[in-house]
Length: 122
Image (cartoon, rainbow, N blue to C red; front, side, top):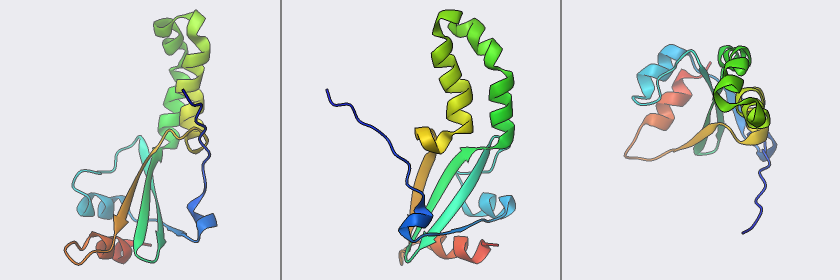
């Protein structure tokens, strides 16, 4: 079994430009990626590709921190390292640990999502 390691590479170092869109536009453009209080979206564009990262919001990070003692009760004090990793590290440092989701949107003739996202950027 190999020991794989994860290393986050910021898209701006690869030539992508970061931008944002409003929550209203987010909900209008993406049927299954609605904005919610616990997540923020980051967008990066380069040529014919948009990267969309879904990361925990500050509110989700704060809630995870506040609920850490509850996680200790459910997981048990013996598993405090795992509870700390899940409740604190993965929310506050999600990019470092790969605890976020990413989608890519490509410019295609059969779909106008790419163009609608670029039109909505601030």
